[in-house]
Length: 113
Image (cartoon, rainbow, N blue to C red; front, side):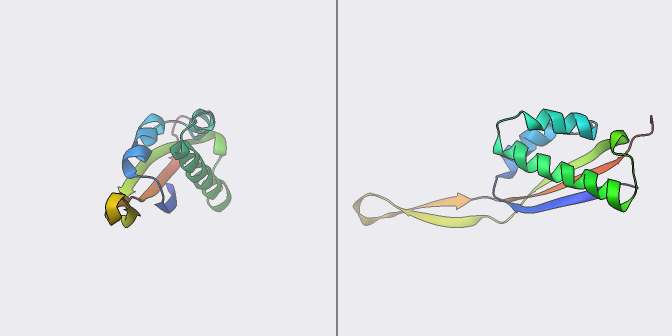
């Protein structure tokens, strides 16, 4: 039975989070956490916390062995986009979008162990 962890309304664009998600999809949880621990990207920090939460959910709620956990799916969806404004020259205004995203991590015990 797969166990999920969600992280909603993350203040990072889905494009930036997907780059990190592609690196760790399908790997063992301990291996993925070690990889993310040494990455500089803020996306890696968010991904690290969500994977650690999914592993803790599996360990405490479903009594799974943490050493045999594997990342089954990592889904990054686009969240709400906040439209913001910044003052520009000659009394005008410039608009920019502040994106957010929703992150879902699903872990399960691997069949090999």
